[in-house]
Structure formats: structure tokens, C-alpha cells
Image (cartoon, rainbow, N blue to C red; front, side, top):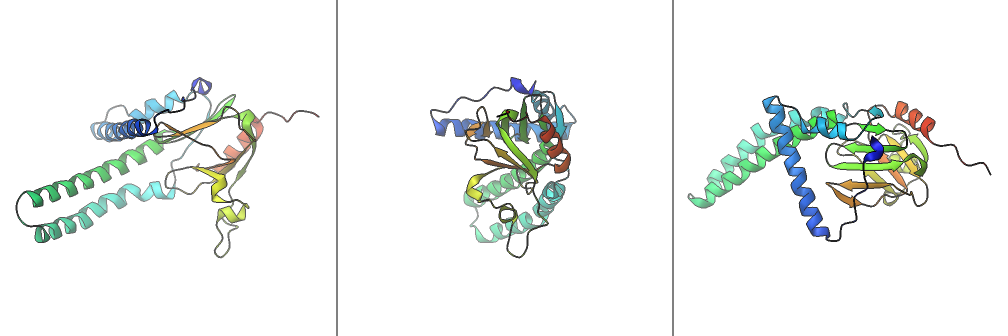
Length: 240
């Protein structure tokens, strides 16, 4: 069940937690791409199942996610080949040139693996609305658990109302410092307001615990159905 996800303990040694979280993210990234290439069960599928039961809201159609892999792969065949040629001309022969070529090649492969694994994870990991809590997940990187009792309000972000130099922060009367974005590359589409204190709510980035501000902005393909489902699921306010 979603409620079975336990809150991570506060890290006493932030640097060690960051290194461990980064290593875990890299392991997930390379495993996802390798399994996708070999046609095996994806780590993102198992990860999504571990988020528990509930109504799911997908993240399949983000504009960035739709063009990410083709754009990255195309850049490797153009920009990286040009860079390799420039290195061959600019760097003296010998070990320095070999190391430079190897470093650039690794960076190119890493970028393709990152794009493929990110797009795959985004297509298999969903947000989950459980009986007592909302779990927000963006691939392997972002994870947030918000008890329904800690949510004050939810609304769809109105990007169409922006005019001139306005952005959605201005439309909703918010400051970026008051908002926690739970998204990767795509612009958030749903805005969740938390109650003061937001008891039991938490989030992690690469497994490292991060603070939650009063407002949480998250991307979902169809924000209207998720907004309606959340509004129905929220507990009724106490009668005074």
C-alpha cells in the first residue's frame, strides 16, 4: 500500500547521503537503459509497483519527454563528432589526446543513457492517490508523500492566463521561494497547497530528504482529473 512507504530518517551526514543518493541514481539509470536494450524487466516497473495501490495519474505526454531522446541522439551524431574532430586537431598526439577523446566519448554515452532512462522511467512511474496519502514520483529522482490530511487545496495551473512577461507564478500570485517544484524538465500543471506544518509530509531527491514549502507544483499529463480526484479524496474540514 502507498501508506506503507516510510518516511526517510533525517541525514546526519549530508555529504555521505548525497554521494549514496547520486550513486543509487546512477545505478538506476544504467540498469534502466541496459534492461530496455536487452528486453528485460525494467527497474522502473518494479519501482512503480512499490509505490503501492491507488488511483494512478500518468506522465507520458510531457513536451520535453516527447523530444528528449531524438534530440539527444541527434546531437551525438552531429555536435559530438564535430567536437571529436576539433579535439583531434587541437590536442597534441599522445596520451592527452586519447584521454580527451575517451572523456568526450564517455560523456556522449552517458548523455544518451540518461535521456533513454529518464524517458523510460517517466513512462512507467506514476503519481499514486491512495486512501490516506498522495505519492508524487518523477522517475527515480523525485519522491514525495503527502498525507491527504495535510493538503489544504489543489488547483490546475493556468498557463494560458499569463500575459507579457508574466509566468504562472504571477498568475497564481506566488513567489518561487514559496513553491516546491516536483518535476523534471516539463512545466508543472498542478498546484497543491499544504496546511501549515503539513504533518507527515516529506520529499526526497535522489534519496536525500529535502524540505517541502507551502505550495507543491507537480507535472501530470491530465491535471483536471487529478485535481477532481484529489478534491473528492480530501477529508472534510472539521465543523466548528
